[in-house]
Image 1 (cartoon, helix red, strand yellow):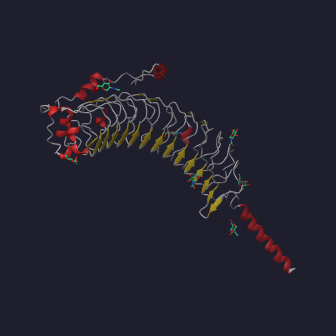
Image 2 (tube, rainbow, N blue to C red):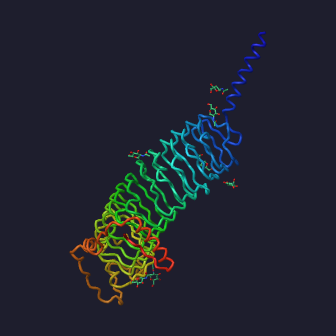
Image 3 (cartoon, protein in one colour):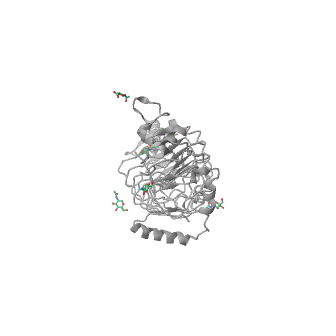
Length: 426
Ligand SMILES: *[C@@H]1O[C@H](CO)[C@@H](O)[C@H](O)[C@H]1NC(C)=O
Ligand SMILES: *[C@@H]1O[C@H](CO)[C@@H](O)[C@H](O)[C@H]1NC(C)=O
Ligand SMILES: *[C@@H]1O[C@H](CO)[C@@H](O)[C@H](O)[C@H]1NC(C)=O
Ligand SMILES: *[C@@H]1O[C@H](CO)[C@@H](O)[C@H](O)[C@H]1NC(C)=O
Ligand SMILES: *[C@@H]1O[C@H](CO)[C@@H](O)[C@H](O)[C@H]1NC(C)=O
Ligand SMILES: *[C@@H]1O[C@H](CO)[C@@H](O)[C@H](O)[C@H]1NC(C)=O
Ligand SMILES: CC(=O)N[C@H]1CO[C@H](CO)[C@@H](O)[C@@H]1O
């Protein structure tokens, strides 16, 4: 009798143990004491059944997961981070994540069959901070898709198939970083970005942007970095960047810009300006007036033969100006720049021989015979040329309805077929 009791007791203990075993690590995964389960590259086609409800971090990267239902993650209410990148997800059932109210990080990148997302896909993710949807094939986003994500701070939509800026950025009141890099966006409308007042970093690099409506950035009062590099921008109207009072870094490299007027003068916090790899052949006298914080200016690989003598006069913070690979005219116009600019030491790549005399003759006193008699340049004109250009030459056009943008896009396609690249500023 006594032995029987002990036997039963032992069995019960064993049963208890085996219950814990069912809560333990799936055989193809690695588990850590910190409630982290690592199942990446495990050949999984479905979620293993034995995932403990107490799991905080679950890594299912690089498997063959195809779909989930609303029960798949129902018990994982403690999850903080979930990695589902590099799978074969084709559709995310609305409500899939509804129980994951503590989730902070969700990785869904590299699911190349993911093309669109239902309005309720992310319902319940009240504490989600970071969402990675890059490198999928998303071409359409429901306007309410992100409205369930009040805590979202970082959203990555890079390398998808989007042709326009989605209208889904309305209730993202915490968003600080947004990437739309590597899509096929052609236009930024006046209202496209108007609800993103908390944004600090906006990446629109490598799209096909050629239309930007004036006022498109006016609400982005906290933006620190704007990347518009590698697009089809030809023209920079003076009001284009109104509102970007906190902007520190502006990327406009590898566009089709031919002239710089006074677009940048409102960017009073600007420190780094990338204008390299364009076709700039003229820069206006006062293009950089007031930019006292400008530190770095990249003008290499343009079509510049000279620069206005007083271009750098206001730039007391200037440390580095890259001027390589331009067709500099090595005559008085360049010599003046070299002699009079107080920021001379910052200039790099002004490839004129008289600036680099053999056996280090002081560059201040070159007397190359071919320069002849360089007379002192005129002082900058007292009138503010930008102001004139800003109001009368390029007046603010009347508001245009969306249909006209579509019409313009259609025209652009037609123009492009004929090789006439142009930026239409509406
Ligand atoms: C089994 O789980 C229970 C509660 O989850 C716990 O108290 C017990 O220590 C676990 N037993 C073992 C052997 O891990
Ligand atoms: C999850 O797996 C991916 C791919 O192996 C890896 O890049 C990532 O760092 C992992 N994350 C965690 C939290 O272990
Ligand atoms: C969730 O937990 C319940 C019991 O708490 C269990 O019956 C159910 O099978 C679990 N669901 C999944 C998908 O693990
Ligand atoms: C991915 O899913 C599609 C159907 O959605 C299927 O045809 C294909 O074989 C799957 N690929 C892999 C590697 O599982
Ligand atoms: C979006 O925000 C507005 C105002 O903040 C609120 O009234 C509305 O209910 C929100 N929409 C959703 C879907 O959360
Ligand atoms: C370069 O600038 C010159 C005028 O300075 C102009 O004639 C020429 O067409 C420009 N070349 C390109 C490729 O823009
Ligand atoms: C640094 C430099 O270029 N030195 C040159 C100065 O000129 C003499 C003679 O012309 C050269 O031999 C040096 O190489």
